[in-house]
Image (cartoon, helix red, strand yellow):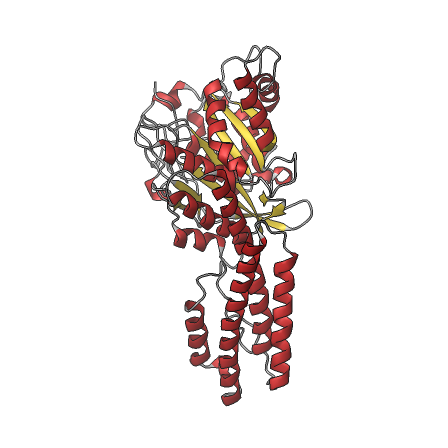
Amino acid sequence: GERMTADTPTSPAAAPAAASEEDAVLVNLPRGEAVQVVDNDGLLVEDKLQEILTASDVQDKRVVLVSVAGAFRKGKSFFLDFCLRYLMTDGATQAQDNSWLGSGEEALTGFSWRGGKERETTGIWMWSRPFFRAMPDGEEVAVLLMDTQGTFDNETSMKGNCTVFALSTLLSSVQVYNVMQAVQEDDLQHLHLFTEYSLQVYEGGHTKDVPPFQNLVFLVRDWSHVDSHPWGADGGAAYLAGVLAQKEEQHAELKQVRQHVHGCFEKIECHLMPHPGFQATEDPAFDGRTSMLRPAFLPALQGAVESILATDRLVVKKINGEELTATSLLCYFKSYTALYAAGDLPEPKTVVNATAEANNAAAKAVAFKQYTRMMERQCSTKRMLSDEQFSHAHQAAVQAAMDAFNSTKRMGSAELKTKFQENLVGEINDSHKFFMQVRLLCDRNPLPLRSPMPRQLWCAAQRQGRGAACVPVPCLRRTTGSRT
């Protein structure tokens, strides 16, 4: 029969409803929905992604990005919705009694999924609201879930397949590679193909002998060889060790593939999953409720989800050794999607340049934000600044911005770094003119920020000339200290 596979997110509204109110109870979803952030043509849906990553409570937080990729109609979205349920119910506090899985009669909602042979997910989708979790060091991170279009359907070109998988690999901190029944040689060959030029992104920029990507998790569905390797992580680790082993008698090409995979990722894991049961794969009324799943499936499902999303297992996204904030991640999304949309698959050197551009753009955004924050504080105080005080405040903010820009580890040539530094100076100069206008208003009105005029001026300044910055300029505080 057809696999119980979830290959595509659209929105909760598009998710299958329960057969009846008596038969199933929908999970009460908190705010949020699945939104498309990269369309079918590989183009960035920038406004949607920006809403997620530049929200005031998200933009400065470090990010954990879990993405699921693999062949179409093999259950990617279905698995991701259980990840979503774990995060929504704060599963970390309910792991011992399995209660985060639900009562058994709750329909599975979130990213769109359905059984059958037609593809469901197209492009790349992300849950619109991150989940906040405290890391062992006490700092709160934003956890993001991303669903990707399945590879090798009958509608997508090789370029499209490569683009989606490459973006998922480049941007995620944990890449879940969903495969069926076993890790076949063609699965490794496809992984080699999709990561080959992605690996070149870091040449000249990453530390020698340190893998450029972070965690890879093989999620093997419908595993039946429990006599040799039991379901779960332990059986998966033993199985994968044999699959990726390099043997003396192996053909050189097979050795090369295994060397490549080991060299790409910092950590590689494997989870073996049982078949979910024929009621799940063949019953048209199946809506994801766990009571319709094979009992042996649930412990393996729970273990796989918790091994990725338990607080002590979260992996913060890094590029070139630097942990990314949501703001920086947005810059990389823009850079990579623009690169792949430009034409044919890029040469490695082109991807290197794209990474360097995104790296410098992220550094510039942080530096510019440093300047605007310092000037905002100066212009939102009750006291009037003299010309000399205003000049000193501007010079101090410029120095702080330049220090922030120069202290960030950046890739690329000296010419590229100079280009972004000059862009930063230009944006600071434009912003300085605006703060001078605000100060002139302050001279005419002792309490200018209580009238609508300065707010309108501020918003107009935000709309003009700020397109190069990855972070919207924050609004001025009122004289009471609150945000406008």
